Image (cartoon, rainbow, N blue to C red; front, side, top):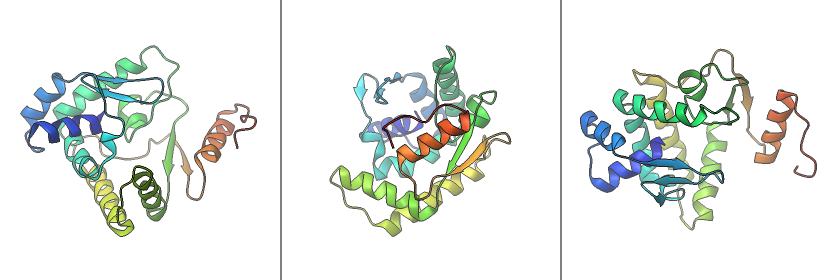
Length: 188
């Protein structure tokens, strides 16, 4: 959601440090999440568009605005109100759904995270420098960890899972195992 709003701010020329304008932008934005993990911004599928370097560089600034956070947290809570959801995000376990259970905090080495993002860009036909990606991700982490409102931290009751060197399927199986659910047959 923060990525989608950052994209809209970039497209409309709203300054990333203008809290009032970003709050107005958030209030006038329709975001929806599909069951197929697609995100729609004002009726447009922006699933790929929110994964660009420009959005990567803007999202922490948008997410650091308290008025924006209040609005988007309310939207996320409304999505989860019916229960039976799996939600991911940097502050889901501490801010959005602090009472949720179980909670997992996924980590990976900085190099691993940068390599994953590089592969994602390459699959879309874009070349990026691994060192620059690693530097940009470290910068975003620092911004998120040091922001005044809702800084990035693992929830005290979260299970920390290091995903370094693991495939998506391996991580999902590990999470299911930690939940006591049977591991999926034939998926990994």
